[in-house]
Length: 474
Image 1 (cartoon, helix red, strand yellow):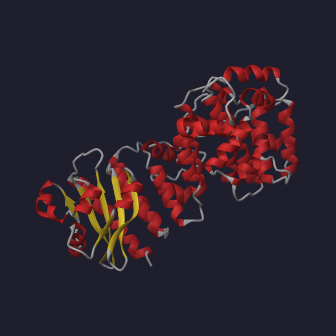
Image 2: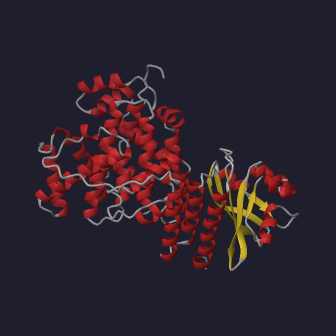
Image 3: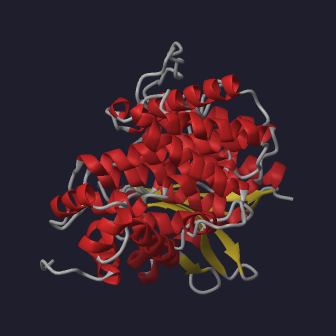
């Protein structure tokens, strides 16, 4: 960028296209999902499972003391959504994506500081709103977390403007005056522009407008930031006491109790921030007057042990079936089990549709899941192919080199174009013994050979899908 002032639109474009594209993509995908839409639950799981590192970290957070105080072991993303709730897992995924963007970007201490303050404010806002029995505390958390997004983005990628802005801050009466002088716009305006462009929370937009409606949720966010900003001067600082007095009056609790709650919230924030991967949170949140003993997180068992993971996921499936969890969630968990515990690169659940004329992808995980899911669409009423053969015999198939020699002619050009020349597992999914679809899995990316144990485990997972259709697929 040149040394002159660059317009707000150009900053948004650069952050979108060059600096924050992965976060922007993830934020748009996740923010657009609705907990009221059954399909969104599977879509959220698929977004998370599309990134193995995010999957591991989501499950790690789901098993932490903050999110899982009952210590009920969670082994799959699907189960995390069932037990913790759609909005909680969505917030965890957004948090991980934002932190990863900052930590892998043009590191700047001020960006880390803005991020830590945002987390601290978000925890304070969420916890105090829960005392008022607010139903959408996770929406408040996300809105507060993203409230300083413009500041985080600027300090992470300042384009040489950081020194000038620091100097301007020292001379200006208000931070906004310095930002307009150096940048031509405020960092809050940058947050608002990014939020609008990425179609983020409506509550976030309301908080950025500083609505005069005295919306309690917006008040929680504002007070959370007043606490996070002023507590750096110490817990006895006058601004801290003033905001705690306001909260005390608002929730009708004694000031002493409110102080204890705020202290505990800050402790939760430090632990959560550190567990997310930022180990310097304590530099921005001072020690508590009487720091309580740290809580114990759930002891992590290695999730990369495939045998343990298979057993854990199969147990979760049994629990889901006994709890009559909805069919799509159970089927999503079956696919997650195959995908993660067998190190598959692509897994698809395809169903017979259009009065038996086509086999069409319903759920897909793995490499280019959206594109591959669209390609996994094959005719069943034309000439015989490998899937018509599979469904007619109602038998499981391991397409290895030996089998390919016999069934190779059944890999029609459209099937071959979709899956390529790879080994794969496939088995019919049945209702009352009648095939209704197919579960397919391969290692197209790694090209690792499939093995007998993997085939047996694949069959076991697919049997759970058949049971789910029988019990839940009314």
